[in-house]
Length: 73
Ligand SMILES: [Zn+2]
Image (cartoon, rainbow, N blue to C red; front, side):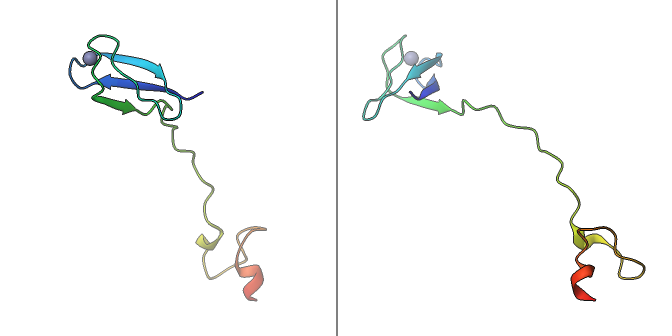
C-alpha cells in the first residue's frame, strides 16, 4: 500500500495518506484536494564510490588488480 506524505496547498496542513489506485487523497483539515506530494523516502547520503581504475599514472607499474593498463599492455 502506498503511503504518501502530503502538504495541503490550501491550509498547509501536512499529513500522511494511503492512496490506492485511482483514488486521490484529500486534506483531513479542509478537505481540499490541492495537495503537494512530498518525497517520503529520505534522501540517502551519497556513498563514496571507489576511485576509477583509469586514474593511475601512465608511467610506472599498474595501480592495482583493477587497473585498465593490464589490458593495454
Ligand atoms: Zn487543507
